[in-house]
Length: 278
Image (cartoon, rainbow, N blue to C red; front, top):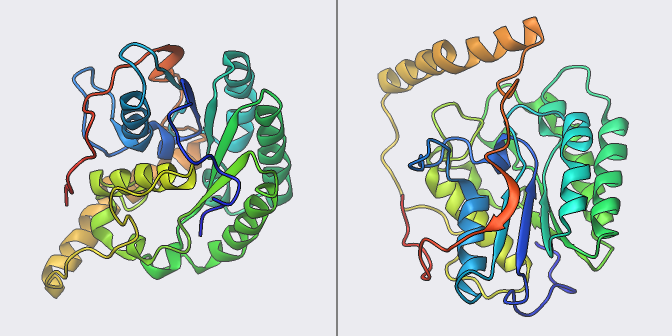
């Protein structure tokens, strides 16, 4: 469950928000915006925060870039995020490190903890995340579980600070449903992003507009042929290119700037909670 004991009872006081992280926070595989960027849960969260403010009285920056390791997030985004001095910061990172076979988990914790400490020193409320449990939906992911559990415990330890809230995705079985994930099986679908945005709002003390943990309606299981075809398509279109980037030391985020690098005024697209999209 989220760390809501010390969270504010209303989010209306947040006049500015900065998102820090990797593809999870950039919004990969959500709907595309007119400018070609993915929308993502952070944009959806900004919509809801902006809706609680007078028109023109909310600012938002999203520094997240796909493919970034925690060291890159720490070195490339942290100084900017602290300098912006936002009321609220979301901080997510480290999973890209965990996916690599020789991950130095102690170093990941050191950098993530330093980032959280420095962001809290600005006076911001900081929201952090636990990973979902990949073993419940992805074959071959059991090797990741010890590091994911260690990171989960570490994030909850950081949340002993009353200014840090935690969104515990690991304990939400709804994320076992593949319909909350994109075809690449690593990034959220639009419905997954919608639920994470609601989870963040709840972690900040806002009564949930819907139960983001609720399971999706039952669906007929795919046929064996359809499953084999989907697995082959995934291996060809996603696994192969991912392995190629790992072998050549490249990243999907190389040379890519943040989609919203400055803390600029942001107007809500809608002032009502979103209808369910899945």
